[in-house]
Length: 240
Image (cartoon, rainbow, N blue to C red):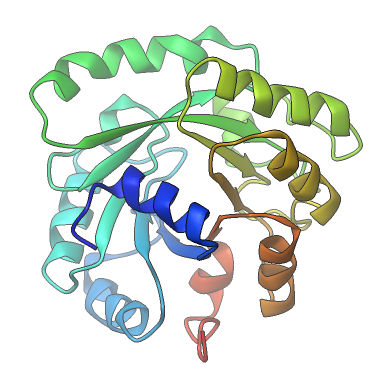
């Protein structure tokens, strides 16, 4: 897996190979827990480790990623809540635009603030249309971004938002129910969005069982992200 990360994701989609990432939140994972956590991840079929959170203290992400790198060869992708969570120690960054909301701070302002850092960084930058879907609870993303998620019943709006992301030149679309979601993105949404776009589709949030994981894949997700389920039960991925 030495090729570029985006190229790897795109190639996997073409070949029908489903990808899996574990999302680690630096605010919820102490440095002392990292060796044991990463050992469990290393023993599963995990393609990438995502690192990020809605609110992370400055410097914490850098220390977290540096420590993770000491225990694994799995590549680390930043999933930043804001530009202060960028670090040179990761392999790539999802250059997120919160296209489901209308707050300019997360559509363009945070991205502009990150440019000085990214100009001198070796991070692979992956433009991503980030679509927040109602997951049954108010999420940290919703509170911090001051935006409302799209309702799961707004199928046409969700699909058009995903297509707009592709038309704007995004390389990935990410359907996210949010950290701590009690409801995963419905398979019918995943299926319609997957059928509408040509670029890879990431799905995350609210996936707490292997059945839900497989449902997401079967509906058309190219790439699934597991966060809370793994935080609460490190054995979640056993057998995967």
